[in-house]
Length: 272
Image 1 (cartoon, rainbow, N blue to C red):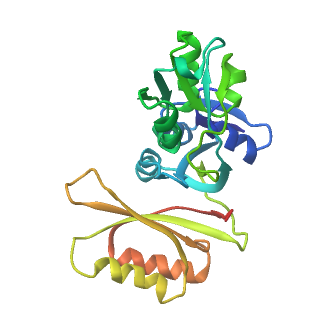
Image 2: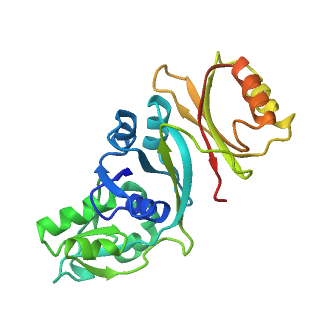
């Protein structure tokens, strides 16, 4: 099976895909929306996208892509994240004046950067691997990248400082997407997104009551601007159970009656 991941070679998305699939045939895409598009268009049978960081929260680009493209969540992966500062062969930490990486990685390493490289310019890239690739092409001792240690091997760099995460524990949750969601396992999770008919007092309380009345445990809820109308929001909810479970099916029917739009993003085996 061909699996779309955020590229280029060496991203955490690739590591997550390698953890989930057996010897996947990887298709490197960027940005995240192109990973989802590859699955929608049939260029890949599955895709892996980062959805949530323990330290920095949800990945907005991935959430937006899941709403507007016709894919289903088929599984989830929880991957420990360990960042390293990478530079060219002759670079030293004191030489670095610019650090490149994905915005999530830069944020996750902000304490290290403030302490060790307080004057360095921080530049956002589409992925940690793209940052390492860029450093390897420029071959300047003043420019470094943040990403997994394996990038040093892929792009001929060296590890200037290892394990520079802000906190010791840092994980990222990835979603496996496909044209179909997962089969029931008895230990499942369902993800949905909805918008309300109009902004009125109590509407969200009524919707959440559909879950509470059936004792369905919600594991996550958050809102995002719809980007259609100012002040209009989308609500994302993860909850325990499979869409084919009787209680879940009843809940979804109840939620649908109270919303302007309801999309079941998928039901899949939960990892935590």
